[in-house]
Every structure is written in C-alpha cells, then in structure tokens.
View 1: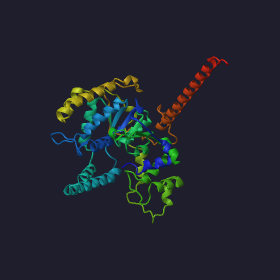
View 2: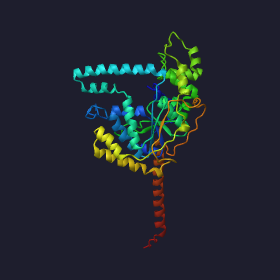
View 3: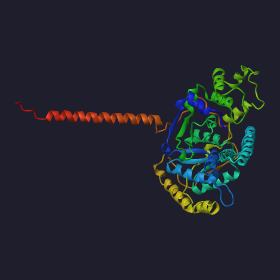
View 4: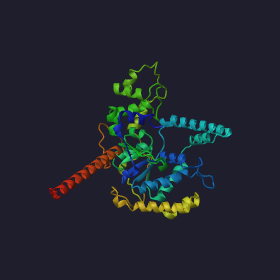
Amino acid sequence: MGIKHLMQVILENAPDAVVENPVPSYFGRVIGIDASMALYQFLIAVRVEGQQLTNDKGEVTSHLMGMFTRTTKMMAAGLRPVYVFDGRPPEAKQNELARRHEVREDAKEKEAEAKEAGDQAEMERFSRRQVRVNQQHCDEAKRLLTLMGIPYIEAPGEAEAQCAALCRAGKIWATGSEDMDSLCFGSPILLRNLTFSEARKLPIREVHLDQVIAGLGLTMPQFVDFCILCGCDYCGTIKGIGEKNALKLIKRWGTIEQALEHLDKTKFPLPESFNYQQARALFQQPEVLDPARVDLRWGQPDEEGLVQFLVGEKQFAEDRVRATTARLRASKQTATQSRLEQFMGPPAIMTSCSAPPGPWPMVQGPIVLTPSPFPPLRQQAGAAAAEKGNKKARTSAKGAKGAAKATATKPAAKKR
C-alpha cells in the first residue's frame, strides 16, 4: 500500500520536489530496485490476450520475461540496476498482509462471476487483482539475475528500508520503487515508473526528499508522523483523518502525540490497531544490512546458462534469448563511459538475516543530496527554447551585419 495519497500531496504542496526525465538521463547511475514491486508489475503487465505467460508445465513465466527484457533495456540505456529482495515482513505488517489476502479472495469470487456472465474485460480486471509475488517467483528471479551478471541483495527486512540505507550511504544513487514509503525510510531520491513497460511511454518520475519536507514545511520526524496519519502498512488509520487533515494536524501540533491530545475522540475515534509508536520505530530504525558490507559488481552474462534456463526449462524462444543476451553483453562494454568506479567481476549477492550493529537512525535535519548533472525536463525545455532564441538572434544579427557590409561596399549610383 505504501503511504496513502502521498504523491498527490507532494504534487500539490511541493511540486518542485518532482521532476520527470527520460531513462537515458540516468546513464551510469546505480539504482536500487525494489524487486518484489518489479516482479509484481511484470506479473500484471506481461500478458498475452489478458493471460500470463506460461510454459508447457503451466508455470508462470511473465515475471522472468519482464525482468530479462526490462533489465536489459535499463542496462542498454546506461543504468546500473541492483535488485533488493524483501526479507521477513515485520510483525506490524500482518494486518496489512491479511487485508491483501481478503482482497485477492474477493477478486477470485468476482472473476468467477464475470466468467459465468461471459464478461472478458471484468475477468481480466479481477484476475490482475489476484496477483501475488511468491517465493518461487523470487527464487527464479535471483537465478536469472545471477545468469545475467546483475547484482542483488537479500534484505533482512523491508526492501525499501534497505534501499534507503544504501542510498544514504552512497552505495546507490536512488531507490526505484512505486511505494512512497521509501521516502519515510529516508531515501534521498525516489524514482517511480522505472520498471514500467516502455509501451506506456511514461517518463521516470524523480522525487527528492529534501524538497518534499521543505515544501510541506515539516521536519523529517514530522514528515514520518504525517505519513503514519495518512495511512501506512504498519498500523491502522483514524477514520475521517485523510491526507489534508493529517498535514494540518502535524503542522499545527508537531507530533502525533500532541495532535491526539487535541483531537475530538468522539468525532475521530482511534482504532485498536493504531500503534503509531511501533510504525514510527519501524520507519526510523528498520532492520537493514550494513551498507559498509555491500560490494556491488556487475559481471558478464552466462549465455549458455541463460539458454538452458529460459529456453530449456521455460520454453522461451532461443533466438530472442540470444539476441537479448547480446544486447546485455554490449551494454557491459560501455562500463568505461559510466560514472561507476567499480564495475566488472562476478555479480555480488549479499545476504543477511541479522541487523547491523546499532540502529540506522532516520536522517535528521536537512538532507544533503548530490545534484544530478541532468537538469529537469522543464529546465531542459527552457534551455532549448533559449538556445533557439539565441540562435535566431545570432542569425538575424549575422544577416544585418551582412546587409550593412553589402551596403558599404556597393558602388554609388551615377547621377544622370
């Protein structure tokens, strides 16, 4: 779920925190990608006539097709993806996981009703709502990434928290995820739409945390409290307190504790599951792998291994697998042009089920970001327009200068 309506709040109150760029703008950038979110998107989007791709055994292969092709395209554009897989979910997330299970069960019943009614569109819609990333999907994705030479990390807890820790430590440049709670975990930069299909023609949406909290007029701890009131995965919500009221409460009272003291409990009763202290602790002190132990390396693809796995076991077309592998290998040869200081070698696989020594505190105060050398699209457009105007002015000046020169050298007409 992430944080309810957070993107809308940011666009309304801190629009300068969001810029949109094409994929090539991130050439050489190391991006930590929420693997479960990416696999979920592939399972939903990679379909034929509304149905997921399968092999002759009935095994779903949409997630593998999506990861293989989309990751190769990111590499070809100069990005350096690192996939981060979730570990065990925190106990506080169990209610949210139970809610998601109920949603899938409800969708299953409605799909059966749509099938009986012969409504193909509704069948497809409810079929997508039943999608769930399971352990087999993750294990197969890890095997594929290893064969592709792409590093991945197994986080001890939430992948977004791990990405945020890596980003703050300078191991990656940004977090790639659709979940807005990446910002609550303290990721300085969040990239959305990164793993979407190119057919949707969506630009990458880049969100800067420092500008978000500045635009909202909050401190980082206040931003976390505001997001908890909006609605997150770790505790219930107060009925009637949406994103607008949540922002007003935190801006006026500063903390959830102070806001609750002044809240009319008869009008806004607190749910039993509103353990905001636990949610706050999970955002501020998540269980993560120590970034100092992470060594990211990208290796060469194992073409024959990919053919054996994708063609021999999953019934992919061999010519497509070899062609995609060739593009992946070619993208690795651009390593010397990238911003990376380390690149080649066997792909790194980091695993840990224990927390690093001491908590990873939430970033307090202003967050110092490394500015991107690529200006936002609106700045690019403005610069292009200015350059066009300058070019036109230079052309006009050149024409005027030429005309003046011609007039000066033209012999005077004889008087009759």
